[in-house]
Length: 120
Image (cartoon, rainbow, N blue to C red; front, side, top):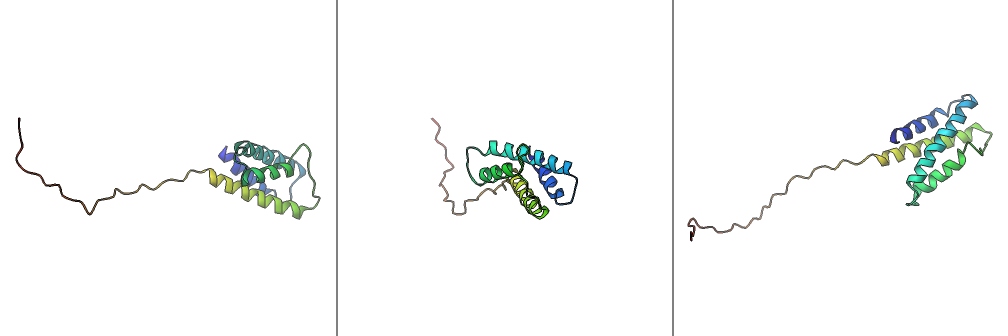
């Protein structure tokens, strides 16, 4: 799923160029599909990502499309959606934890020991 998010983000950035209408229909389908998957994953959290991708799903809905009729509006929307998808992808990558070195106890109190052993 993570790599499909990158593909959808790249498709958004490619959508800035003037292309045939078939590509934009494909773009609506792939972005709305990815938004729907992210909505399902973020449903319980109801945070920023959930709200953002609900709005993205509404704008890129292929069943009841929203038309802006002017290309500059779609360019801005494609850039914002591409960046949000890319940032969400980066959020999914697990952070590698740096192993902390073993701590040496400098103020170690020496336990007195004797050489003699008591044997019973």
